[in-house]
Length: 239
Length: 290
Image 1: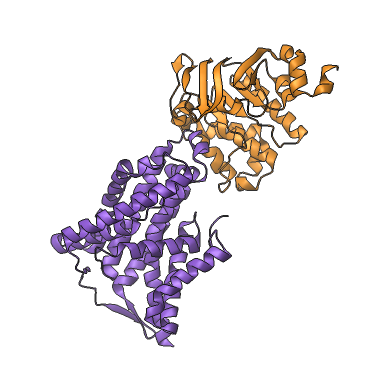
Image 2: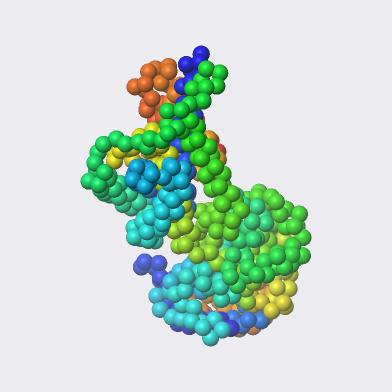
């Protein structure tokens, strides 16, 4: 269970998060929605150790993660797929995936995890020797997710994984995330594609100007007129 | 005709050391995004270490090399921990600026220290085979310098294999491409930086050993070697050990050719000209990635 409490973060003068509290169970899919600049990415970065919060705590399975460097957060079973995939474009697909098993946590089971990833994404097995930078957007996202899964996480955080992907590709990616969750991995999903995210998630948080302004089961959030107006467009309110 | 060939061969032999000198600087620059302008001084120190090991202990220079590589690597770790560690905390642009300041300071310090300790005299290693040469089709191949080329090539190959095949080598490459993404996979980026810096320094130490064996060293040679290495990096681009090596050989040949065509005084000009042309025509370098 991930518990974020009273989290404040800022970039210089700019306040990015204010008193944010979020829970993600190790068996849940939780979505975090909100407009551009609401602080979604900052929240994930704080959890992953890439950004140091000003105040507040990040606890994972009872242990305080606040202030740990990213590589030690990974070692404790929390992985993140950053926005824009951030693959090593000059390395092959298999090298990218292999680096996911760098941690002491993941290394012993490197081969079996790799086989498993190729099972989930057969396309990657076909392209294992190609440079990651030469793949299509959808394939790159598969590598990004596969690489994060190679760390053998108990919690997988994803920052805008649907960005720039065709609807059909988004759908198959969400299916995979559902399967990953059923295999016992918590999923914390940041999305601007609110409909897709809420369709998959059990619960959701709404973030606005660095504050949590709404939370609840996905169906409730999806039914909220304010949310519909803000994120699904004015026409969605009546429908 | 033989004269030209002779100059070219000497150019290739010297160029292999340019390549080795550049490989260390290129690794540090590519991974840490830090420009260590004291790289030439590290080469100079490596040269002195070899000189004294041979002169005082009586080691064969190639045996000395086996000692100098790990010692220089250790020195690199210390330099990273004591100086460059504080630079890599900043964003990339600040890193470059700060590393120039720190690098020049380090260069001046090491130079002054070397003058104080070793005097400003020019030195070079003399071995029993120093004067020996192979004669191939009228071209003289000085044995020491030929061995230099072989050693340089072996070291470049080892570097290449390390970066391609080993766990930490891959981690270093990943860190150089995107340190945040690398850290999200469990790679301790600080350790990758320290390791890359240590390897870069080890390569500088090796290059210095070969320089004092085939040519000569003095406390003031550092800047010249840093400049050559920079020209090679711009010429070859980042990201390929063999590319850097070839870049060094190209520079060595170009210098030799210009010395024949315009006289020895213009030797240095051709390198800067190549530097300029590469920046204009192919800023990512001959073998570099855009």
